[in-house]
Image: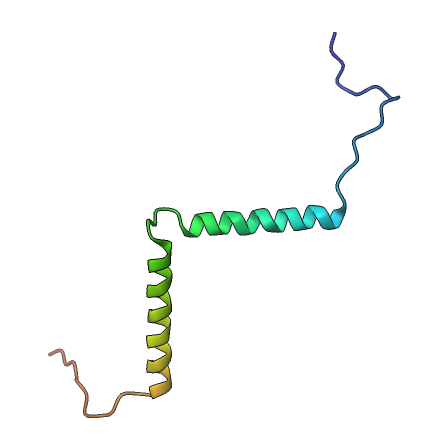
Length: 77
């Protein structure tokens, strides 16, 4: 018959250090996030460049302030 518990004479395998375990978990989490971010994207570099360009344009628009009063108006009657 099989036993569910190890023999009392056998020592339990050493568990990893708490810091090592945390480092491994953090590394695995970063890897999963990176894989999830690039899932379905053929050219990751292109997407990153577009995102940076969009952020740069948004920063410039925020820094330039509100548009002048003579801009376009939308009226609905």
